Amino acid sequence: MTTPQKGTLYLVPTPLDFGCDTSAPIADVLPQATLRVASGLTHWITENAKSTRAFLKRVNEVAPLALALQEMQITELPREVHKKGDHQGEFDAKPLLALALKGHDIGLVSEAGMPAVADPGSSVVLAAHQLGIRVVPLVGPVSLLLALASSGLNGQNFAFVGYLPQDSAARLQRLRELETLAMKTGQTQLFIETPYRNKALWEALLKGLQSNTRLARASGLTLPTMDVKCFSVKDWRQQPSGISDAPTVFAIGK
Amino acid sequence: MTTPQKGTLYLVPTPLDFGCDTSAPIADVLPQATLRVASGLTHWITENAKSTRAFLKRVNEVAPLALALQEMQITELPREVHKKGDHQGEFDAKPLLALALKGHDIGLVSEAGMPAVADPGSSVVLAAHQLGIRVVPLVGPVSLLLALASSGLNGQNFAFVGYLPQDSAARLQRLRELETLAMKTGQTQLFIETPYRNKALWEALLKGLQSNTRLARASGLTLPTMDVKCFSVKDWRQQPSGISDAPTVFAIGK
Image 1 (cartoon, each protein chain N blue to C red):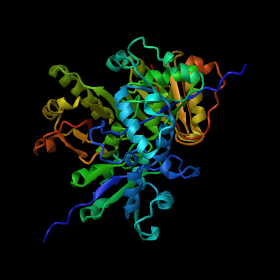
Image 2: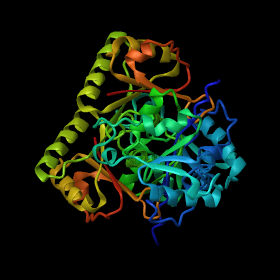
Image 3: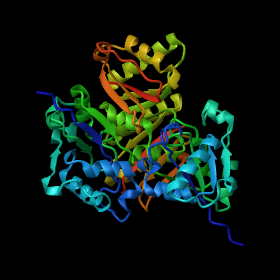
């Protein structure tokens, strides 16, 4: 008996529109190799099965799927991973990769952008390495990096720190901590917020940061509504600056 | 007299092969919108004019250029920006954008990947914001994020810190500092090295890090030689693990 060759775990990026504005062709943000590989996969691990099926329907329009949607195996990551993050609990993702050990390729996807970056999935990738399963990341949109590049802030030293605390005193303390770090080391600090809280965060930023700190925000990346701006806090304060409730990446730096 | 409408500054990502292995079609890593915009631009700001011309020849094969190469305006960033980084000196990039103020769109590119991320260019982007010029980042490969996603390390809190010191004592000290930070905060630490020094860095990593620290390396991203692995330092030490002199991203984490 020979051991079957193991499958590959592909990290498949998806458009940044969360399925809300699908007017732009998917090939505008996903290159050919990504579409080709995605259309050939029949086994998926995902944050959300419904949005993955919607994504695959869009792929099918430009690169016919290898299998009908209803015949695909689409497995959702457990709720604990969504809530606590991949590395906080005792979650062992190895069982999810059983079919890869038998030779099936598997696609890992999130709701939008690159799985395992500011999104669940890294526990699956880590399990793949532990099982000797090849991991291949495919090219696509990553909001954090599009935001960083277009901010004009230091891209040679930067950090992404996730969400800030919701409590306003704790948020202010964290903000000042990040600002001090950015000023002292030159390391750009990126963070995100749940879109309906954009306005509260934005007001806290304008109020709490030093006037010479540079503050960038990037909304609607890759979408027709895309808007990226970067000014000193002082300059932001001198202009009317409402903020949309579109997904936004924020950054502060020197 | 009416004021002419300002042009847009597009951030144009390029393939990660540094022009060395161009066997893969460019449309495999750059989506349609990126190719379409790049082919329409006639003014460029770049790290290296020669590699930009080579890139544009590849674009031309799939999306015909709006202008013959020799008629394009391709301006190199000054040496000081390459050497010291965009935000270290007194470099003012505004003059480079004079034509954008007159209505011309301009493309910003680096040698490989996304300009202004682990590469020069952020001074140009910052100048654009200051001049009220719209900044639009296009989708393409970004080695840091492909490496992070495929490492399996924490992607919800991470930092990229550039190069480590070359001096071995200083490098070890910096490594331990990054390791302590990663262990204490859970923040994955990414860094890079000039490829011909990969071997020296790799040996220093295996020797200097704690045995339970996770260590990832991602080489040849998007290329046929792509290889991404992540193990504990202990497990790395128990296997033969030479390292190629391909561009590599390193990461340590919990």
